[in-house]
Length: 302
Image (tube, rainbow, N blue to C red; front, side, top):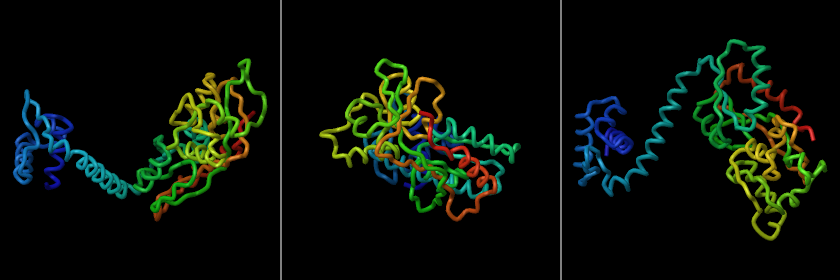
């Protein structure tokens, strides 16, 4: 199959009709029909059957489609990086940042940044750390703010701040724990709000649990969430304690959150990711400086 055939095949799989596929590809319906016929002739089998004015994929097409999806994803990545390379003079500041740091640290940093660049356009995209590293490598952003090191071959890193893991829980219940510290194994012995293991700090927490000997089984957990901020909100609503980073805890808006230091202390690093081999605009350096300023005190109030 030629690339043109693959694009037409993908469009028909997505839309289900020749007309809709033609509109998606900005070509004529005869062009789509002809490309499908050529592809089927080369392959020696049908890709679609017509049922009630819709094209239904054959068994062969369904088996082929996952590979086509992967190829189309790679093609889109090539298009994105090609477009980004042509926009090196853009006056926008493109920030990629993890969800938790976008709640409090980002607005405060942008407030400082605006003092020097009041007229600069700023775009913000919230993603998880692994996605940010990939996007920065593709030059889809000028700077990415993540937890921990991403060790990507096409990305440079700069340290921003170091915080620590803390345990957060609702403070006004009858059974509220008033201590300022709690051991990690003590939290792990009972149900708590976990962060998904695919998150860097979720992984870090799982590793710490393993170092403690597993405590005789898997960690108990009533609720598992994807982001630190959601974990903190659930804890504040009384669903149980959560272990999050201290930067997230600083973003608490209510008066019902008790914060305790987790022992042994576990450091949490915030880093800036930059495209390797690309001279960053001066505005990027100013934004990083502002973010360092607002995250310098990584300890939330107890």
